[in-house]
Length: 355
Image 1 (spheres, rainbow, N blue to C red):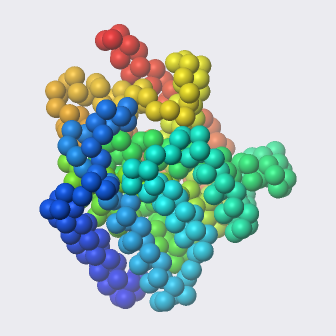
Image 2 (image 1 turned 60 degrees about the vertical axis):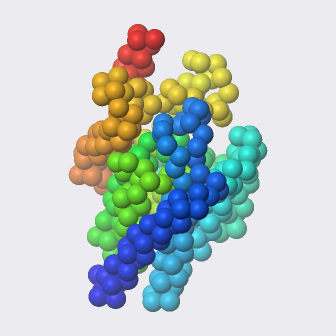
């Protein structure tokens, strides 16, 4: 890494820290109601104190500076990256500003954004490690539908797990850190450096979110991170053909399958609208177990983030060794879905027996 880039990364980290600290001081002193999360009765609420949803704003501003620096210093400008992140950040920001949008309307807006962005940028998945699916991807309408689904799963998955201190932010650092390393060793240096700095920004945010939350990501931050992960994964998949596409499915399996599994669970098990939140997601069941054990909401909250991300990281290890083996990655991805289902069933039955 060049000296100028090292200096910039250091300055960027300091900027994120001081902006976060300053915003918190100002908002706490003046007691702004804007961005304040004081709704404790929501199904996805697990905090006890009013907390500002400023994380998304800090990360978005920091990313804007990063994109500007890369354009000026390296003439490196990824318009699709900026477009996806900007639109989805502002969509999430609407909720952070406490402007109510119905779940169905929000989903329709997300789909409209995705259709526009994918078509406008001619963004696509260039290869998939399944021959019949790769043939289908040559059909424009199918490719558009498939790509929209990929984005919807990851962006909504990011928002779904963003309920506990550090859960999404730590998870995203693991994913983006792996992608940065992969791009670096395959000499895609500018993109690797971009991802490294994205990780750095999120790591500084974690300082204000974990273990005790001084600020939340908010929907703006969750959608922004979901868009970052989605675009970064597809760009890396397209750039490095030697790595199995199923490896990228593996590193995204938790975000993807949390939404997929939850959708069908709500329809066929609890018979409710899959677009509305409930308290039966895996991380919430684990939280309930910790709460009964520790009798402490804060400790139970951040313990979930530690254990879920540690277990996730351990599950990734075999795929990191065999990322170039398409057959291994394909079946290991299926195995991970089975493991998730098995673990969910264990915690769900434990919860049901107690009730």
